[in-house]
Image (tube, rainbow, N blue to C red; front, top):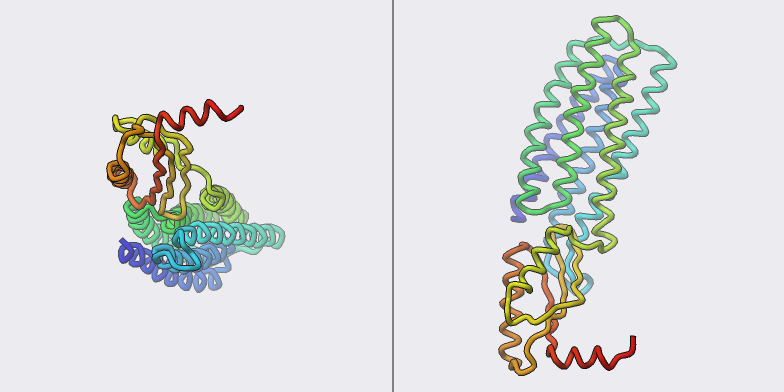
Length: 296
């Protein structure tokens, strides 16, 4: 799993490096603010891909003395950093687009510009689909963030092609910075969603409702579990952490209770892969008496 994640992140680094250099060269030659904006966007993609590569390596490291709960949140931190980079890229593109609108400079070499953007759209489509597939299999937030980043690149590249085509057909340079502003809008939208998805795990928010229900069903379906409470869930990168108190028959032996908890933990892990489970066992009748005696 780790090798697959690292390989996908490495592929993203290579593709983004080549596309950044290609867009930058063509953007400087044509004078198109939209293509230069896309070059900046690809540069942030490159930095994001490097961050993702570091994150997927770091997040799968085993727990150590400084990080006894593992390193899963490195992926969430990676997603947050990528969101900041995307915001910055969007702001720069808006600045350049407004400047181009004021100055009214017309780009040239539009055919080459459209060709480069078309190639970029095709390459990013292929890489993004691969990253999404690996992210789903490995539940990697860092790779999912990188895939979203590249997916936006596909649409923004198409937007640049449309803008340059309109400039070529009408002779009006206004469409080039207009395309850049549309690109910025897509970028800000992506940054918002990525920020939200990255910060939820960092604040130890609960697992999605469907996953919580799946965990609860494990306890409800076992007759030996007479009740459960204090169910807590959170996520750190691709890792899930769950702890819960279950209630069993007062006469159940310690050996049997231990075997039950191990069995339940295995079922939870079968239901939700890459999950760390801690189960505390309580005697059912004694726990009921305790709650009755405690004043509310």
